[in-house]
Image 1 (cartoon, rainbow, N blue to C red):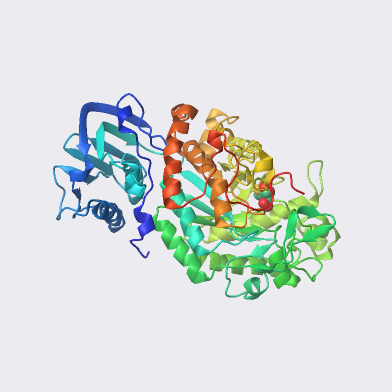
Image 2: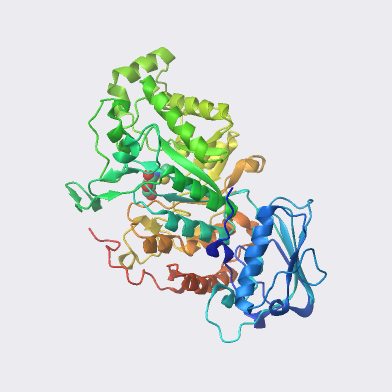
Length: 560
Ligand code: TNX
């Protein structure tokens, strides 16, 4: 990978603590570490320290030390990094191969602060937490007399879940690479390690595929966009919307994410949510079209035609290029909201159903089993190439082959069912971690959004193991927040929807449930908000009873 010493990566975000609170208060780190013990009355002074590290660390970790030291160098205006080798005082990074991959410890004594980790992610998370022990000035917040001392404390920390995700839909509205990088930055601050990139949908195909140039020539552009939910009669804004990522830009994002310890999981949503692709290659649909990149929201009846062999050729060709671009073990293949009305009428689909001997039974239609056939075939193709699939919880309906991972979005029930049946599952329940829902109950003061209020308290209240029998809990890989962007068209609005609910999300992903405490969390969020201000991120202040996005002039909840 290309390693870049980017300024943004330097600023591994944090929360400074009000030092007067020590040692009676918990240290204000989000997500709250697993173990925090106060070990003395002294304080370590960062302003006088040098940074040294174990030379056995890998290059990537060394870059992270350098980034951190660089930031302190620019603040203190002196050279902070020590000459070769680990010193016995100051800030010291020690390698211990016995540590779990994402574990780290921070031991603060009067004259030395020792960080121990075994991997670049462990190092990153240690620096993220350490940064949160520094004053806000570390992030460029104006402060009169920043206090650079840290109390004597021992922190031992590791994540509850290995999969800690955040999703972004770039089909309904396109966001450029700079916005994606800022999104990744804010994920890294929260120790979130999976970026689920929803790259294709009815309203726009956003990834360049060399073998099918029309996917982006035609599929990445729509003529206009429906206004709010004015579907009947359809009212559109008359404004064209377009955008896609070149393969070079995709690589840039994947590299940038890797530097931040984040794996990018691409989603090619199939066989439904495919009108943008059908507009480009109408022969992949049941009727042959013509189709137009969709200008409205919802669930479309036009989907890929699994009766035709060339549909599978297309899927495999696209996935070949996707696998070239994304090293992720998992590829998300969608599977949600696929109506079967066209398949019922389509001679090719019916022929396929007959050949496969699929039959309607009490539980499912033959067409449902046809979707299972699509999933299984694509899964096998990816498995043969060393990859695994994730699909939305609809893939569980009917028959699902072993080894698939289910993403539970229609509440938690899909995940509960999947785990009980022995499939791995990722919990992304609508209502709790859907960041396209309203930030507050006062929807008439909020930017127009999907469905319902989901204030931060609601997000914070989610517990991933609820309803999961103990013996099945090992199948819960983690938790993810989702941002669908039907009504989110600008970066300001985008970050407003995610922040600070992302702070709640990361505690669901990272902390043992007994470490969660909304009152403590609320106090820590206050510091995060100061930092978001300093870094230029928009966010909701509803946690203080102040709904709404200042400066936003678009439609509000309740508008028609
Ligand atoms: C359902 S969640 C969808 C998306 C929409 C979203 C709006 C899922 C798998 N599918 O296509 O954008 O609702 O909340």
